Image (cartoon, rainbow, N blue to C red; front, side):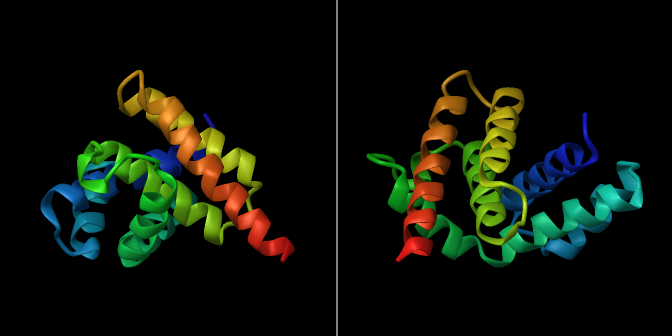
Length: 138
């Protein structure tokens, strides 16, 4: 498992905690890193993803909602919402190739969610990715 994949897993776990308890992100990070041991580079990237996704949650949710056909955000499972927020945040900000980001999100869904989650996450993120690429060409 790559360091960046591990960072995404940790960011997802913190995002899930944030969604459940709505504590300050800094408090979640502090508590999380006292329990989980990881190299500094893993922690830095995980925190970057987590902080970005929480600070832009409303904006990310609007994008997810616009691309999740026939699904309201509040009907999605907490973990699926967290995976989608993380994926959309990274698609909008990262220099990582978009297909890698989508694949990573699908892998997170396979590991942390239900059997139906992986194709759902793939479909939503693929739609977001194509909309972003179309917008870039305009």
